[in-house]
Structures are given as structure tokens and as C-alpha cells.
Length: 346
Ligand SMILES: Nc1nc2c(ncn2[C@@H]2O[C@H](COP(=O)(O)OP(=O)(O)OP(=O)(O)O)[C@@H](O)[C@H]2O)c(=O)[nH]1
Ligand SMILES: [Mg+2]
Image (cartoon, rainbow, N blue to C red):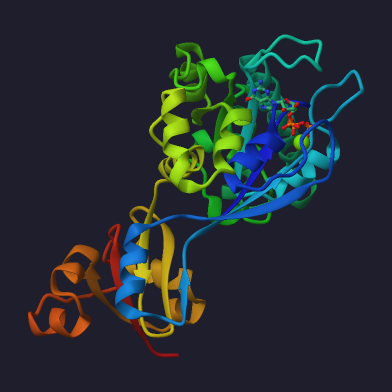
């Protein structure tokens, strides 16, 4: 999963990047676009790896892209370069500044930053939509496509993001070639000073997030980056001093999985034990497609062992013997923690 960290100059993106990845990239203004990856911890994968002793253990992975803000110019918003970078991300994480930054003249205004960012994304999308509608006068697209673009125009003109439209309202299958910014999931990180690290999101911010179909969380990036770089055994005590019970990374991953409505299924064997993120509600055939398109194309059935059942019996043989393995067809809705074996034929 690719998550882009974006936001206004000096909002703390690079510091947040360090907090989440445990890296120690120098902070300060400007800099290059940077990538860093994080494994999504999962105790179930740890336990399965102990049992199977596979050659390879693969956790789900998040790749963070730190996209610098624009400095200097009167325009404090997003550069064209940043917009292009954002277009390549699956999830947008806006870092909004709520701490006093002595290097900046402006007071913290996280709501203002969120609104300004949203407006830029609306304008970028509206440009694409209007261009398509202009062309439609000549090339006469099919009715459903025209209707989709008109619906999008109407939505954007009301300053609503495209992600607010359901799949029924907007047939996204036909829009894959387009890159709409407001159709991506948005997670807002409110970057606060240390003294406010454990306070909940302000009500006004929560209201705004709801209106924008976005999720939010609080971070105090400077101090949490320092904690993230410590020995894991020492981290809990320092977090507790801030009034926190969970690391920034764990909170972030939980928020992102919740926003995207993701569950995990597992594949196991001597070669590899692996976690696969999957959108909740996906069928067995769709899950097979996450592993490989051949498995989706030639799908015959899925053999399913829920993680809890596996733990109860301790081995696949014991589960089989007890008759507790499920044999499921393509429409079976995969559950969090399912261990899948896909039978296929191509
Ligand atoms: N007090 C405080 N300072 C912070 C916090 N997060 C970042 N800073 C400071 O703010 C300054 C800018 O942080 P960066 O992480 O470099 O900001 P950025 O968003 O990456 O900046 P650009 O990439 O230039 O747009 C640095 O001096 C940080 O140490 C925070 O949570 N609290
Ligand atoms: Mg930076």
C-alpha cells in the first residue's frame, strides 16, 4: 500500500515520516521526495511462522512517500510537482500543523490547511472532468460515461470529494484510466505539540473530516519520532509520559486499516507464511486475484481454515482430521484471519 505524506511547508511531514518509519531523515525545510517502508506487525503471522518455520515470512507492507511542501513563493500550497507525486499514491495523508513553528510566521491553522488542500484537489479534479466534458461534445461518448462525468462535475462544484460517491453512483470500473485526487482515501494527521499529544481531535475538525469522508488522528511528531527511534523495550514508558498507550505507528496503521476497511487473510506453507490485506467484503475469488491473476482466472475453490481454528488444532493435518476445514466457492466472503489455500486450474 502506497501512502503519500503531503501538506503545507513546515507542517512536519518529514518528522511524521521519521515517526512512522523509524528512520532518521534530517528535518528542516525542503528536501527531496523520500520513500520508506514499514511492515505491518501481526501477532498471528508471528505465531504461524513459528509453526511452519517457512523460508520466508512476509508481513503486509506500507510504503510511505514524503512529499516536500512548497516554500518561498506567495503560494503556500502545493506545487505542480507535488500534485503529480500525490497522483501516484493510493492513500493521501495530509499532515496539518497544529504546533507553533518558530521558523514560520503564520499561526497554526490546521482546519485552514485542510480546507485549502481540499480546494486544490477539487480544482485539479474539476479540470480533468471539464476537459472530458468539452471533448465529449465532439467524440460523443457512451451515455453512461457522460452521465458519470456530469455527476462528478455536480459533486465537485458542491465542493464535495468524489470519494463521497458510492460505487452505485459512480461506476469506477470505467474510470480506471483517470487519476482523481478527491477519489482517494484521505487521512489527516493533526500534528500537535507535545503537551496536547493525548487530547482527542477537536470537534470542529471531526465535523470537517466527516463532511469530507476522511479519517483523522493526532500525532506529536517531534517527540514521537524520538520515541520511535528508541529501543522497543523503553518506548512504552515514554509514551505513557505523554498519556499514550500505543506507538504512533500502531495508531496510524489501525486508523489506515479502518479508513480503508481492510482485513487480513493468510497463506501458509514451508516456503512462505504471508499476510495479505484485503477490502472487507471481498469474495474468495477476488482474494485469489490478490495473490496472482492466474489464481483468479482459474479459480476452482478455496480451502479455508480460520486462524482461531488452526491455533486450536496446531496443524493443518489435525484440522483436516477433525473435519474443520471449510471448502468454499468463489463468492464466499473472506473473513479476517482466514488461512486460504486456493485450488485453481489454468
Ligand atoms: N514542536 C514541534 N515541532 C515539530 C513537530 N513536528 C515537526 N516539528 C518541527 O517543525 C520543523 C519542520 O518539520 P519538517 O518535518 O521538516 O516539516 P516538513 O513538513 O517536512 O517541511 P517541508 O518538507 O519543508 O514542507 C522542524 O524543525 C521540526 O522539528 C511537532 O510535532 N512539534
Ligand atoms: Mg519535509
